[in-house]
Image 1 (tube, rainbow, N blue to C red):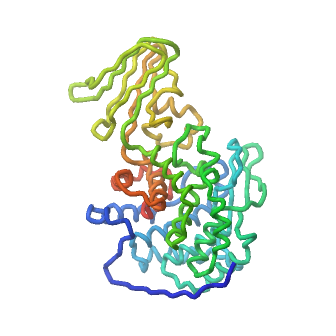
Image 2 (cartoon, rainbow, N blue to C red):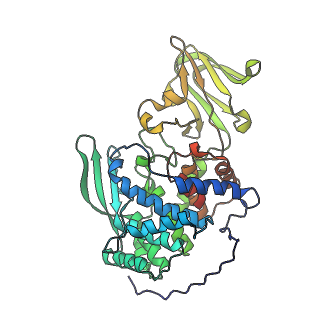
Length: 450
């Protein structure tokens, strides 16, 4: 770590005026203020109340600290009054969590490079939490030379090891509970520490080189690129399944704003995944039967006169592919399949390329994980008959029809410099989304940042 550079701050405040962030011009003038206000209220009032899964209960306090820092960053960036009582209470609460050594509570980093996805690994890092706290306090308008921020910076400087920062890794197994495994270098913790120290004027070029060498696609998306619950769905709106690409997105955004050049190969890779997995455009209905059979497919819609058939397809074979046009006008239609053989559930449904699309996530998503998810939400069978109903996905421009997933995707696309139709469609989804469209409690905060 090289010596600290001098800081020059120029603060300009014009009462009643909020300068939108770069790239936000498409939102201004389209009623953006209304839905931004809604997201601000949802962010402000969000609390951690999800039922415990895979050791999550043990880290409730850590996640509460993470969420509070994220709230402050999201609210400050979206123009929420920083002198308001509720905002100042959040800031003072963060300050109250600082330890005597200058550190703040650890946060979960989720970047342990263990390939065995049979286990749930949890990583906690005080360095990541301390870096996040510094960023939140700076966003809140705190003086960079304040005692809290300087003590936190000194903690990071003391705990740097080999140009990086680490995390404590825990393993959760239902038979034995939560057990500490080891200490591991952490790309997420290092990114938070670098972003915070860079904002304070420290030269972090050597630390950045360490991180840049490890920002490889396989470190960011594995091991859950093909997760064992439901195939490739990206991003994954589920606490236990968040990959490093989600945990690291916020500090990387701060680093980009510090004019750090992020690895182009990695940005291109993530962007290509996002382009393939966005719920936009048309899809292919693929059917796979348990043997050669005659089949008919009817697209139906319910009207005042009952069910009416819009289109019909038919044929003979073991497999079938039907190109369909989907979108908001088609919302509410169903596809009725009749055949002499039953469908193979895992090989049938709507696809984009090799990726299978799902129409909806159930409201009680977590309890249903691993318990026949596709059968419950995609197919409905009538006992004793080879008959199925498949609901088409709502291609609404989102990722996973979810606020959190869409916001994370938009931040990555922003860092990659993406513009155009896909981005606009995703922004429109965020405009229209309701609280039920977010399966994570930090989704609304990330939507404000996005």
